[in-house]
Length: 125
Image 1 (tube, rainbow, N blue to C red):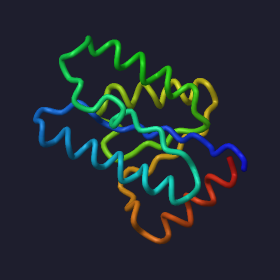
Image 2 (tube, one colour):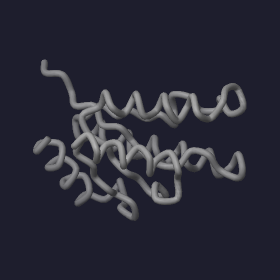
Image 3 (cartoon, rainbow, N blue to C red):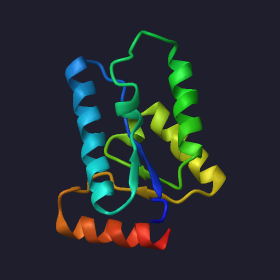
Image 4 (tube, helix red, strand yellow):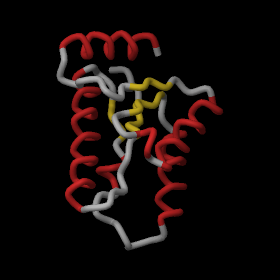
């Protein structure tokens, strides 16, 4: 069995309300399931430290997610990433490192065509 590709899911986490934060976490998980269906292992920082808010300085989480992302094979940018300071920094770092980056903002992860396109993208990595 070959080692699966690690695909980092980048999108907003911090939010003005707890409800919105839950929506962001859920959205990242939905894309994670999509990646798993395509044969890649999703790395979802939203799930890794969900609800750790206020337990440590935000800088720790931002630096930690960048370190985690650097260990991945590619980055998937999901809805809302352009409004997220952390996700825009993650994208900039991925681009600087020459990592493959795919922007799926506005794309439905449950659409059959999206599944086919993601399979192709992963196959080309």
